[in-house]
Length: 208
Image (cartoon, rainbow, N blue to C red):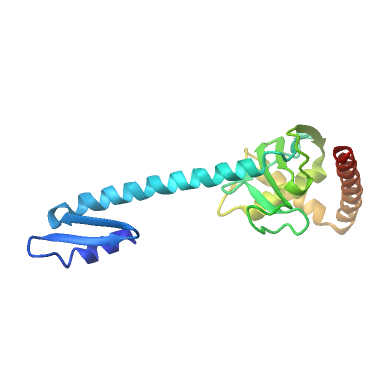
């Protein structure tokens, strides 16, 4: 885009070969002989401005999530490893599993850390002003759901150790069987109810 703007402006120099343009709020004046130099300088400045703005934006987001509880999940079965992808961070509403904005108070942030550890950052809705890290252990039922989230979020690539991708697809196929899927769903409901009970107890303690 910037390339086109400068090239178009360069077609209308004054009698001295000087070009005057305004890009955004910036007024720029240069001689035709310096066209490539000016384009490079402007592109570099734009890149730096973008990085600064981007980092400031994420710094604000870190502050926003600072009081949220963090779970580090260890997978106890080494035969059911986690996978990752070229887009490993998932930000989604805890109930709908859809992205509903970076500052959604009901958003959970997750990502695989390695083939046996997974990160969860709880929604702001459950923040209680205490920054803590919970270390938990889960089984292959958890791996099935988290690997699916990772796979669904991939842009182009799934990334894993040798044999882990095959293990992932074999496990998914196993759970797609109606009998195995029903058993896993029943276990998941029990775990979900227990997790909600824990959240409610923490809210009551924090309130008093």
